[in-house]
Each structure stands twice: as C-alpha cells, then as structure tokens.
Image (cartoon, rainbow, N blue to C red; front, side, top):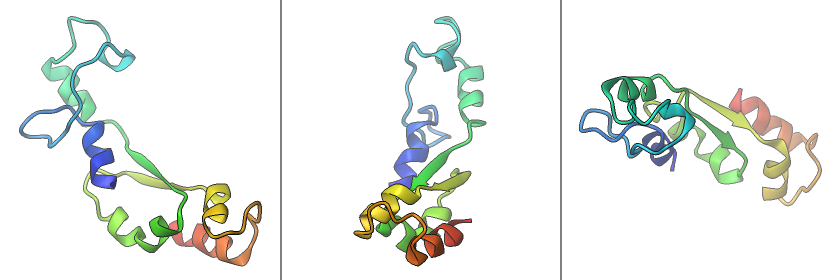
Length: 103
C-alpha cells in the first residue's frame, strides 16, 4: 500500500513510476502549466507521509519505511488503540510502545 501512496502523488511519466495525471487542482497552477516539465519536476519534490494507525502497519513498519519516496510516517494513537481493542486508551503501554517504535 505505501508504494501505491507514493505513486499516487508522483506525475505519471516513464521515469517517475507515478500514477498522477493532470487535473485542475491548485498544484497545477494554471491550465497552461498542467502536464509541463515544471509540473512533473514539482511533483518529485512533494513530501509524502502516511499515517500509521493500524496494528498491521506497526507490525510491517520496517517494510513501510523501506519504500522509496516515502518521507515520513505519523503515528495515530486513537485509531491504533481501536485496532487493538483498546478504544480511547491512547496511554495504554502497548499504544505508547507502538508510538515510540514509529519515532
């Protein structure tokens, strides 16, 4: 899944491995710039972060962190605690341990 996240925000060209086309969004600037070399270059500078909110993500953290193009992860203690069956227990030792593991 993290590889798909990285690809989703990189311009789709043979050299980038991205899947993002040109849409009429703020990052395009103007219609004239959409699909330009500057647009492609800019998409390669965007930071990519994923939320680690599920037990499976913490268990697969090394694999997630090894994804080329992924710049950072953010831990989500509320969702993570729910995924353990510890709803609302963000300070539970298992949740705190996982938070520290993602630092």
